Each structure stands twice: as structure tokens, then as C-alpha cells.
Amino acid sequence: MAKKKLVVFTGAGISAESGIKTFRDSGGLWEEYKIEDVATPSAWKKDPTLVTQFYNLRRKQVMEAKPNAAHYFFAELQNTYDVLIITQNIDDLHERAGSKNVLHLHGEIMKVRSTLNENLIYDLKKWEVKMGDKCEKGSQLRPHIVWFGEMVPNMDKAVTMVQEAEIFVTVGTSLNVYPAAGLVEIPGPDVPKYILDPGTFDLKHIANLTHIREKAGDGVKQLGSFLVA
Ligand code: APR
Image (tube, rainbow, N blue to C red; front, side, top):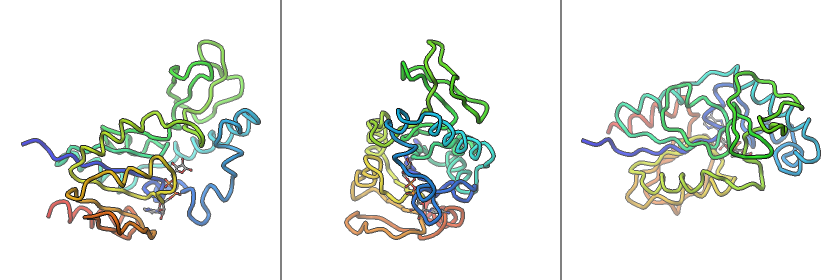
């Protein structure tokens, strides 16, 4: 029998227990930095060195971090479900835990790309990118990140994946950033939906939704009991 399609939509909260800061919690990254200084096309235009340094730090932290119980839970779930992960995270912790189908909506920190041709994308093995590091055509490399104000190239693919979901799980996102946050509105009323996050949400209008109000590591245990039931 074909495995059921389980789509998991993740945000910064799933990587919090790996030691990577979220953005909007107290002590989050956007308290330390201003979005407009480091995560927009005009920030890059104004001060590419600062932007490069900001993402170098993010990359160093990601390389030092390890997947946690929640990342491993969804990797293991591939044995019983056809698991598709849509993540807003730029880290590679889902992949390192063993998840095979991971779609990144907001880019990937372990990649850089040409500022001349967006299709020239390179894998990084080290954390530091320097000003003067160039693509094969001779233009400066920039982080392979979707900045505020930029299009989300993988959005259409994500919408199709969610439309086909037979079970839909959201983990660790404040649902503040669009268009990604709109994905939770897509699955129909018959699709069982779970949101795993210690925060509060006003999602009463969404049918068939269970809120597991826990941190990801503990919450996946509860989620597991729902999924085998
Ligand atoms: N386990 C699960 N969820 C957690 C945990 C945890 N241990 N700790 C915090 N959370 C939850 C918070 O309750 C919150 O709902 O994670 C969420 C983090 O929200 P944000 O910081 O807003 O992160 P996210 O939703 O991923 O942000 C979306 O904003 O700045 C951008 O591009 C960036 O992709 C990011 C996007």
C-alpha cells in the first residue's frame, strides 16, 4: 500500500533545541540585529561586508550545531509515511538527521550564489565567506538566502505539496512571515493538522487542528502517539 503523504512545515523553533536562536522569541535574532541592516537587498547594496559577516556567523553556528530529537523524529517517520518537509530554516539540520525530501523556502546557509547569475549556486564546506570571493564569472558571491522583499522561488512547489498533504504538521514557527505562513490555510477540513509550538495562536478558523503546546523535542513524542493511533 502507498504510504500516506505527511507534509511538515517547520520554522526556527525546531532548531532551537539544537542551540540556534529563533528570530522573534525574547532574546531572538531580530532583537540583536535590525532586519533592514542585514536581511534585505538594500542592506546588501549598502554594506555587503556587514551582511556577509552576519551570515558567516549564522553559518558557523549551524556547522557547530547538531540535529535534535525533533529533526530525527521526522527522518524516522519516513519509514511509515511519505514525508515531505517544507522548511523556512536556512540550516541543514533536517538533511543531516536523514530527511530525504526537504524544500527550503528561505534559502540555505551552506550555499552561496553569484550576484551576476542567480543560477550559479555553490555548496560551501567552510563557514567563512570573504568579500572578494567570486563566482566563475568574476562577480561577488552572496548568501543563498531569500531576503525580505525578495520573491520566494520555491513557494509554488510548496503550495502544491501542501495541497496534496494527507496529514499536515507545523512545527516551531510564529507564522509571521508571508507568503510562507499562508501554507497553514491550504489543507482542507478533512486533513488532520497538528501544530507543535509552545506559543499561542489564533487558528480557531482552521478545522481539524490539534495544538501540541510543547517544545519540539517533547512535543514530537505526543505527536507520535497521534500518528500511530
Ligand atoms: N520548540 C518548538 N517551537 C519553539 C521552540 C522549541 N523549543 N522555541 C521556540 N519555539 C517557537 C516559538 O514559539 C515561535 O512560534 O518557534 C517560533 C519561532 O518563531 P520565529 O522566531 O518568528 O521564527 P520563524 O517563524 O521560523 O520565522 C520565519 O522569519 O526572519 C525570518 O526568514 C526568517 O525563516 C524566518 C522567518
